[in-house]
Amino acid sequence: MNTKPIKLIVLITLFIAFFASTIQAENDNTAQKIKVSLQKRLPSDSVKGATVIAQDIQEWNPKETAIIICDMWNQHWCKGATARVGEMAPAMNNVLTIARSKGVLIVHAPSDCIKYYKNHSARKLAQKFRSHKAEKLVCDDKLLSEKDAVWPIDQSDGGCDCFPTCKEAGPWTHEIDDLKILDSDAISDSGVEIAGLFDQKKIKNVILMGVHTNMCVIGRSFGLRNMVRLGMNVVLMRDLTDTMYDSKQWPIVSHFTGNSLVNEYIEKFVCPTMVSTDFTGEKQFRFKEDHRRVIAFITAENEYRTNQRFPEFAHELLLFKNMNCEFAFGKPVSEGPGVHNIENLQILNDADLVVTCIRRRALEPDKMKLIKDYMNSGKPVLAIRTSSHAFDAKGNVTRSGGGVVASNVPVSDQLAQWPEFDKEVLGGNYQGHYGHLKKGTDIALVPGMENHPILKGVPAEGFVSPGWLYINRPLRSENIQILLTGAIPGQPVQPLLWINNREKGEVIYTSLGHWDDWQIESFRNIMFNSVDFLLKNSK
Image (cartoon, rainbow, N blue to C red):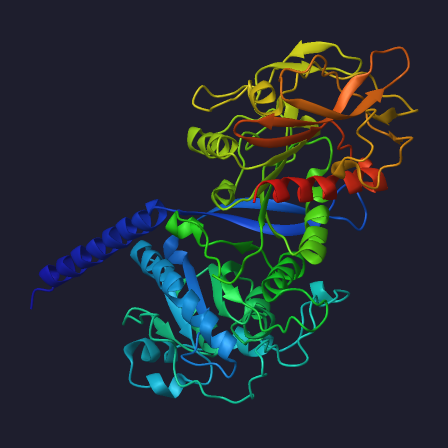
């Protein structure tokens, strides 16, 4: 028998298989990546014990990415929780549909309901696998990173905020019907099964969504903590989740502020968060009963630690004024890769107020359009310090003492600038700043402005700022009301805080905003008062 033809056929078959696998690998590597912006809270490099917000841009291979939907039951024991699940489900299903189309694996995890799906092919897929690594690692404990963390809310009463309080039970039987389950999906409530499936599918990136963030989403065998233990690049989709929190319990804030506090905790101690916008390109989801005013904090500068100070200020607005604070942050650098970028600017579409401190940034045209559209919308702006040269990336750069040199940071012609922002929006006339003085800058109230609501809590004799004085005279708007001035020995007095009453909305600008200004009670009062003033006038 001549075996040569058989050997030839085998060789050809092996060659074809190798060629096909090579092509498949190339296709996987060149698949359209998913760009995501992950928000996390990290220890400050410059201030011990302080935390900064960073927004990390990553590009994921969709075939290495999975979404786990946690406990989106058809009925919860709490009526309020059931209603919020029903409200969230259509938006969630939209994300799942888009994610599937990109090649993302969808895992449905309705705990305690798995028997309902015993004959579903998606259930049979998940049953095929178990992870020995997960069997050893999965547990109910907190992470080491949470060792000294204080849990942000009191959920000891079960978290129902209905009146009368609902009776705890287990009425759920399956996942809510608004979430479509396809044969290509997986169904499991076992972290060991899901980890085995992820090993088989070579999953590296995992998104958790569903309910409830402070209980099941963080703590299940497939939850955030255990995905961290398993070494996954795990992230919470923070707009498609909910907490079990009774607003009558500590810290006695609204249900939706309770959501925000738990998300803060997760970003600081567990893993980053993201929003559904990265998949949909649309506004992030918000519950219809969440009536909090939305404040968008935007910063991209490397001098004044606003990536630390803005989140600290926002946390107080969240706790004490029930404000919904969102962040769009650029890298705190002055040059290098990524300097001309600010992530998460879609928050401007929902914002009732923008608080900003940006220094010499150029942006992609669509991002600059978001900025300009907001500034021309008639909604208010609170701008501090380097906002006077926010989008003048190629203009002159000041030196200590008021001198200027030409900018040497290259800016692509494809990026958009707005050098007229200072004049057109703030009404200012920034010309640099005076030198650094150990004495600081003397801050004085303009005569007749002592009883202005923005200056409530500022002593009549003024105060001293450790920051160097900006040069802004003469201002360039006819509709400006100056509230504070600044002075240093031997130099003209400069306007320091003013209101620009634009036809397109009120703007408050102050050249204060040095990192140590935030420790001065008068400055902090000015910032809180400015938020109140602008939001009151914009209703």
